[in-house]
Amino acid sequence: MTDYRTLRVALLGAGAVGSQVADLLLKHRAELADRAGANLELAGIAVRNVDGKRDTELPRELFTTDAETLINGSDIVIELMGGIEPARTQVLQAINSGADVVTANKALLATHGSEIFEAADQVGAEVYYEAAAAGAIPIIRPLRDSLAGDRVVRIMGIVNGTTNYILDRMDTEGADFGDVLAQAQALGYAEADPTADVEGYDAAQKAAILASLAFHTTVPLDAVHREGITQIDAAIIESARHAGYVVKLLAVCERLPAADGEATESISVRVYPALVERTHPLASVHGANNAVFVQAEAAGDLMFYGAGAGGVQTASAVLGDVVSAARRHIAGGVGVGESTRANLPTVPIGRVITRYQITLEVDDQPGVLATVAGILSEGRVSIATVEQTTIEPDAENPAAGGSARLVIGTHQAREQDLSETVERLAASGVVERVVSVLRVEGN
Ligand code: NDP
Ligand code: HSE
Image (tube, rainbow, N blue to C red):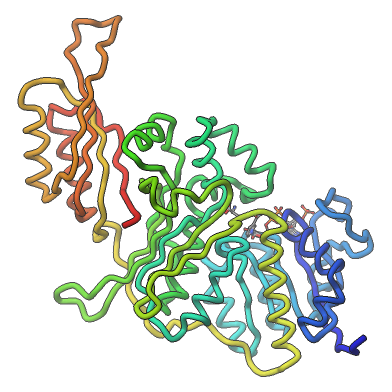
């Protein structure tokens, strides 16, 4: 057996992901040593409750509540606690004590990434975070290394497993939102506070991380436009299906050309539920899987697909980082810092151009369609398709006038124009209710 140098590995957190990482580190010790060129000694596991139930069988003596002591003297610190504090303080402690850090914590990186990367630069350490975006899918390394010689134009993807699991089950089985969310929690996909998933915060954090890497720019979380899926109900799913679409929570990061009077290109980073044509590859991303399309100037279109959440799946990405960190430790030299050289401005959502589907309930009277078309035309929103269906009169109130449902598909329009137009439609007197306005993405 090769006589490798031993590296001390500290693990912070033994929940859905951490317990699997610890298990694999112990189980595959010999193989990992050969790949890393070092023995990876799991020195301890910091948790809140040392007697808590774990998903894998782990030696009781490894557990501690004293993360600070565990971190000191470690070569590699794996942070899998989640949340901001104490994760931030302990990651900084690890860096300042000379350790490399591996983390899956997108909330931390999206809010304190600059501080953490700067601290690592100062001491020549490296922060690895492959698992922080899209779970088991290798996407950070391709963006940072494989595409380092190219220019990324657009990233579009499903980057949250919990919401994809919920939307998919609603679409394929007519499942209830609340029931499926509880199942996603039980399966270990959801964040400790699942609001982060269903309100789009988790996807926005990942979008900020991906856009920062792809566009060599620090994208602050508050520059990411975010909408969640809590407004998506069975009626919207059904209406999408009728029109040949499926609803997906998408993260879109794109490079925009410099507009008149602007000195530089800019970027748009946004997360929202959108309609995707059923024939599009993203429509067949089921369960907690994720998929990320990357469009680069020279490489063209690339697609990354796989498990976006789940303890053991995410542990694979974490362990890949641990092996990289170990190799770097053994080879020596300074860590590779984050590139923020382009420093592009992020535009507000109003500048975005995409297609829309607007669903309205209107008076079923002569001239109503013409009024609606007129308002859209005045607002520079061009109609691509219209479908009208009659709404059955209310049996308890037959005197009330008839109503119709209009589903309008638009050509590409500017978000600002579209939202002002929808406001004018709502106030027009012929529109009884704006049922939904959804972007159409995927072409
Ligand atoms: P869990 O909530 O399942 O586990 C968190 C672990 O951290 C627990 O062991 C907990 O200890 C420990 N912990 C929490 N707070 C403290 C604290 N203050 N001091 C010491 N220990 C603490 O989280 P996950 O494993 O699901 O997620 C971990 C990270 O990985 C998060 O950043 C998450 O966003 C990310 N991630 C998760 C994925 C998933 O599918 N679950 C996928 C990709 C990334 P105790 O057990 O004693 O309570
Ligand atoms: N809660 C996250 C998700 C975990 O559902 O995608 C993976 O980052």
